[in-house]
Amino acid sequence: MSSTAPEQLDVPGPRGRTARGREVTGRPPWMLVVPALAGLAFLILPLAGLLVRAPWSTLLQRLAEPHVLEALRLSLVSATIATAVCLLFGVPLAWLLARVEFPGRRLVRALVTVPLVLPPVVGGVALLLVLGRRGLAGQWLEATFGVTLPFTTAGVVIAEAFVAMPFLVISVEGALRGADQRFEEAAATLGASRWTVFRRVTLPMVMPGVVAGAVLCWARALGEFGATITFAGNFPGTTRTMPLAVYLALETEPEAAIVLSLVLLAVSVVILASLRDRWVSAP
Amino acid sequence: MTLDARLVVARPAFTLDVALRVAPGEVVALLGPNGAGKTTALRALAGLTPMSGGRISLRGRPLHTLPAEGRPIGMVFQDYLLFPHLSALDNVAFGPRCQGVPRAEARRAAAVLLERVGLADRAAARPRELSGGQAQRVALARALAVRPELLLLDEPLAALDAHTRLEIRSQLRRHLADFDGATVLVTHDPLDAMVLADRLIVIEGGAVVQQGTPAEVARRPRTDYVARLVGLNLYRGVADGSRVTVGELALHTCEQLEGPAFVAFPPAAVALYRSRPDGSPRNLWQARIEGIERHGDNVRVHLDGPVTAFADITPAAVADLDLSAGQRIWVSVKATETHAYAA
Image 1 (cartoon, each protein chain N blue to C red):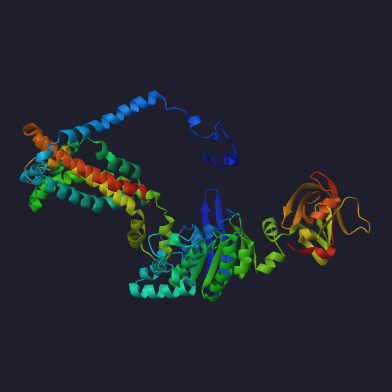
Image 2 (image 1 turned 90 degrees about the vertical axis):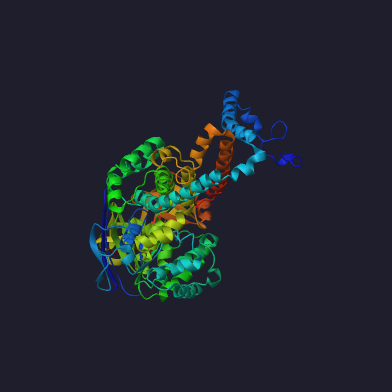
């Protein structure tokens, strides 16, 4: 590279360049470049279309409409509560899977990931069968506490938590497996009980994994559609979240659907940006 | 005795079975090659590796029935394992906090300990900001902060570079001298063991092969491993007066012994000759040179023959004798340089 001192180069190429430069790798083959560019266009063009067709002039006005704000508020609140529920139960579940030997652990781990691959509608049907008014647990809940979950905001939270929890569990379990367990041993030799070890050593050390899992979980909960509409229905104000509102608006006023979609897109971009930093910063 | 233990850990291909007793204030080093079971023994003492047999009693109370967090121990790990998310001060305060000491008081005690190891000014530093020697001292302070009755050190100096090691070794020696409980440290470095320990326990293949003060062990090694460690040629033979028969070779010594015996002599006591020397020294045999390598300022010659031996000679002597591998050569050792003792 340095033309001022070419005599210092140990392996001078034809024009004073070393052998390990562009000359060896050559041009990328078109058989890879063309499909790669096509794939990129496929991913980006729909989003670009959304931006192009957006009614920018009336955007703020449409965003301020009560039913939009209502759906947005409901989405944010239910996704946040669902994430909190997932943290409360998912982190201990991840710890159990990563740290405690018990028979059938592999099976349990497989079961935890089922909601990941299960079509969300099927999840909604399953939730109805168990927690619905005629459901196995639902009947009991109604008889004992007078609580009905389907078609309520609580039902939205449950549907979202069901679908999103695996993201959190997998992320946290991965972080726990990656964490050096000898730190936990060191804490034990200092007199820390297992709960103290978890609270003061394990959790702080896997915090980046917990945060990443929570963000993924929240994003998944925010975008939840199938399980929500099946289990919680589509009532404005109580169960109509943003994705449901988008779907509904598309039939009646497409411009409103675009506006709502733009909001969700903006939220996704923010999440992606925040997640990138989390991924990059190693625990 | 503060510590009285028999540690048994059975694994599929390996069984550790060692007994050890440590007096109050005494520092015992477990010395042995890699895989000998030293660290397993230490982990069993700490309660981190379950024992398949044996018992541990500390000041007359059973220890092996308690989980690790219930044992009155302090442990320094080989790579220190300072909690990366806590400052040096909070690392040291961690143990007292677990014992229920209020935060402010735990921190005050931690600050005193950090000062004692000369790190008062690094209290706020995170472990990754500390040098190796500083991290080692924080780890020691952290272990001492729980006021342990038994202090366990796993290769406490192995992660340090040579220069730091020298300094930290002498500091560690002072801190161990101040500590009035029992100390067990694990090392594979004979120098660390000699400097730090009052008594050595040599472990090979999961069993104790020799124990004694550093001077005793260095002077009278009982296995090839120990002999190599302290730099001696060692043979096992049968003594008859001042003569010890090792295989087909008879070695003469100044000591009078009967029965099974060890003979040891330093490599520097070995002399080499191209032709049979005049005046015939008592211990003389012919050997083949297996290899020649640098050894400090000298040259170490590996000899094969009736016995295998190392000879340390000067580079000038190598040139004079024109030595090369495969060559036949005469080897002699003065009787006054050999040392025989009962096996």
